[in-house]
Image: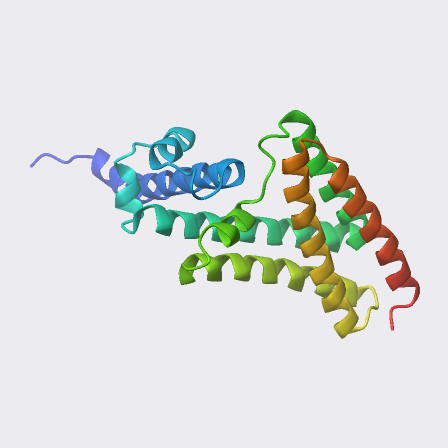
Length: 207
């Protein structure tokens, strides 16, 4: 009897290969959603950006473009949520606002025509799609929850913390749209400066 010693390796690597292929497609979709919006997120370009076979899209996402957009929106939402939590736990809310402002300014300086948010693109593109709308809404809500929780750790009343968290997300997302339209980062500067001033007032009177 011949023993194929490569079989166990293939069995272990196959799930990882499937997972990696799916993640590459999601990453390609995230980038294209930010750059082109849902309408411009062509599947052939997703496969190219993700360095994955085009035929693998329907293997991982039988629902096609709509299902892939939901997965990309959820992935973006979770990555930003984790980044917010880690930054605020380490450095606080004020430093996190500056860090994210600097990040988007660098993106705008390098490629102002590409700046955007995959979650906002999902929210704007297909409001009639319940799954995509729900994914975008859940992502925004998760960011607000993290910011509100961090503010409460800094002594801010829960109601005011939730209100300010909503202001942060709305201001940054609006500034990204204006920066995209203007082709520069000045709207982001205005938004971040305004948020920092409002935060200073809030922390000075947290109750």
